[in-house]
Image 1 (cartoon, rainbow, N blue to C red):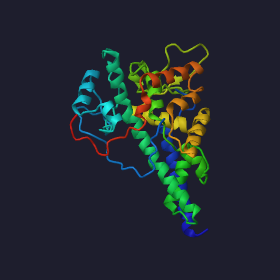
Image 2: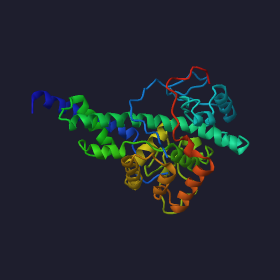
Image 3: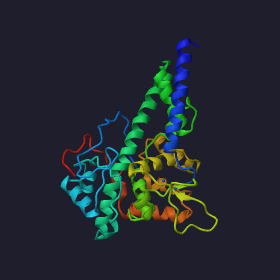
Length: 326
């Protein structure tokens, strides 16, 4: 081993330690949690800065908050955000990443309007998380090809692989294991689960802790205690600083936790066969997401079918930040 490589490995070790410390700030849930996408993007995806110029903005850059659900709905209309136009391909999903769900979602009537506002609020978050995953996946493919063709990776590339493998819980040189885990979540599945777990944006957990997906944790402090937790149960609902963190933790949970091995293998099989990812089919692998088991799977599939969510699996974020104020 050359002096350069020894030095590089020292740097790698230090940075991996840093990555591990950073992961502690936002770790994957340690328990099974409440976490047809085509989204088969295989090219490098542009990463424009987050997004538009809102009238209200949270402390974290790029996350936007609204005082009322009605105001949010009006703002969606002002920028022309319409799900039918997204499905038809006439428009893309604006980069509107809400920091929190408005606290009065249950006051929107009729119910169909409330559902639409909820889906339009959550969809950009899911697409943003998937966009980031696709970027990592594309880089894995590129590096795997270079290694397979006899090329050596430089120190920074090896560092990146070490950090990513550490984050996803696989060996750093196991490209196949990485590709099975570093992949998107079908939007139809994510939208249905967020609706179920958050009560369509009305639950205490999403209002108080931005918990879109009801993920369980067992830490002593800092999370929400379920009001109807059974005797002898000690879990809490993981709280987040904002909704994007919740969506990112949900995706990472499905992509790493042992409870969702069937989900990942089913997704990998579809990839190997050249089939689009099917959220309705993959919902069948969510047996361990909830204590309700089969009843939970039935609920998720019902939401996907009743709201025709599979049609949103081809949705894409707008390439650029929206210029109109929201």
